[in-house]
Amino acid sequence: METIARTLMIIGLLLFLLGAGIFLAARFGFPLGRLPGDIRIEREGFSFYFPITSSILVSVVLTILLKVIIRLLKK
Image 1 (spheres, rainbow, N blue to C red):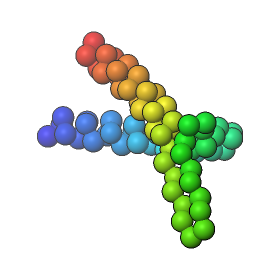
Image 2: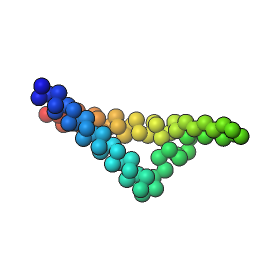
Image 3: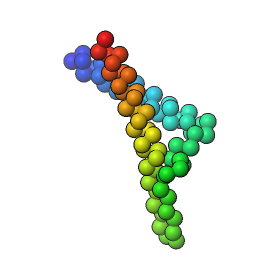
Image 4: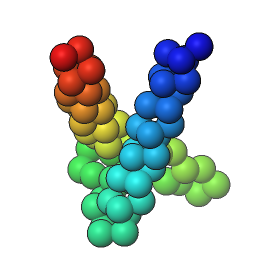
């Protein structure tokens, strides 16, 4: 039961840090969601937005972060 509690606390902490990072990025003007390569199509009565570059960037950062955390927990 302790391992489940510990896992939930770590996941909660990671979600909090992710939310704080997104908040600070928006606060300091980091253009997450408006990067070159993000697809935006706007027509009359229709708009489509797919942040492909932002998704790739977030994926790379989270992968690196999780690899570091996993290495620290294994020691």
